[in-house]
Image (cartoon, rainbow, N blue to C red):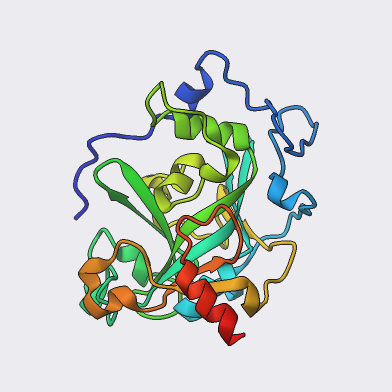
Length: 269
């Protein structure tokens, strides 16, 4: 069972009430859509981002875990806030957790608990868990008993000022302002930036009205992907070194770059 939460992320309405908070603020080279309450629409890394109202359905999520982890790269994660604003980020880094055989997985040995129940649900189900009693991590179930994909990093595309406010609510007052690429470059950071918490656990990405995925505007080839070992799973024995982390080569929002693997993969191409 999950331990009781000792702390909670600052509610969005409290963040919004802070002096000087303005979700429509803009800065730098961000592209802005002037439609009333809109916040920055795209980052400088993808200034030609094409907006789409389509969403990824059940068939997309119904893939083996490793395939899904790779397929997520370049897709858009969306959270629609209670006031109607939408936060968007492009997925740039994932990790695959293969279920019972995977010693680094929460479902190793086929163990099913109230905490990890979402890992055993239909593909496309969110598994959100808490770490250190404070932070959250967001996963998506795939094919395979107890298998799921960790969303590790996003490139922020829309709502950057709101993301910055949400992230800042958890930081010390004297901390330097976060740069765009720092907003979502880690699993707990992206949950903070998109206001994702335990209440999202077991939501269905294919049908939920508050959180979903949209197809990215460009297809990624194998040469754009880097395969490396997962982060922070030393407890997994030999599984800690298995190449089950995937990220977009050259994207600044990736949390940890593995230069050695990049060189090896480039030499093999």
